Amino acid sequence: MSGGLGLSLCDWLIENGAKYLALTSRNPQVVDAWLAAHKKNGVTIRLLPCNVTDEAALRAVHERIVEEMPPVAGAVNGAMVLRDVSVRNMSLEDVQTVIRPKILGSIHLDRIFHDVDLDFFILVSSISGVIGTVGQANYAAANAGVCSLSAQRRNRGLHSSCINVGMINGVGYITQSERNLDEAMERLAVVHLSESDFRHSFAEAIEAGQPDSPHGPEFTLGLREIPQDAANMPKWAPDPKFSHFIVRRAAEDALCAQLRRVLQQSTPNDELLEMDSTSLGLDSLISVDIRSWFLKSFQVNIPVLKIMGNNVQMLSLAELAAKNIPAPLTPDVHGQETTASAPSSVNDSSVGPSTETGNTTPTSTPHSERTASDSAHGKSEGKD
Image (tube, rainbow, N blue to C red; front, top):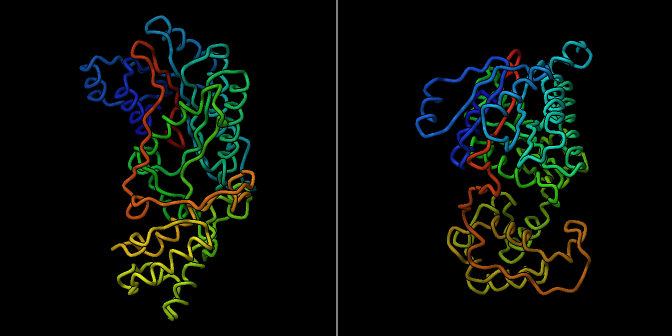
């Protein structure tokens, strides 16, 4: 984790109280100014060259950390090597070169901390191990392996989690790579993640990694929702485990049909959904009729003033109705028993441009007098 993404994570850890960090890589290349700036603020950072596939070397580094620094609070393995090639043409060397840094590096870390319950033990994986990407069967296998190891550690009652990271822009491999991956990522319906998104996911990983967490140790970020009638569906769309990413447009289609009926128009759905009450010419009587229709069709109570609000697109109303449908009407979606319920009410802050950033405040960060230790591979075909 001595590349751009790893150093960004270090900055975040330091901002949240970490005072001691140990970075390992086969050939760590960190700008002296970065080290000096943190040293000036009382932060101790050790750069320890090491090949994580060599267990003896990694144990020697661990012994040095134990001797020279406070107790280790957490460990991260973000090793990544890429050798993209089709399965037909993939050699054993291609497989081993990609798998060893992730799998062996993670196994060696787990052995070192086998009976030590750290504050966090996080393995950085990739979304390619979840959805599959062309030419990366070796990389997908490596990511699946570290996720399994994380689950095994949780089964032993220890902190552990695994992040399946999507495409991060602005820092890390995607930014440094000369390859144009935008078109490929678009076909896979992968969203562009920011440096801040990755940091927030790390905070979520700390929380999700707790032994008593009701959630599994593995989570994925970076996929976007796809309309059911999209022209070009990604290859992962038919897989049932991704069904919640397929947007069922029943509410949108039904609202458009109702608007055409009451307004006696033939405007297509896409245009109707982009219009607001003013452009549609909705008066108070029609708005009351639409409110009644929402109540009858979806058991959702949307105020008339909201329906008539300026700059409130019909798409927003449809999405609001779909979001607030009572659970008994969608038992297969919510996984709840069907019981009688009152119509859902919508408050005035539910429609309009979202101002949420998705920021997550970390619930567990390293103690200032403990060491966050992380491991990364030497960069040959890929970078961390």
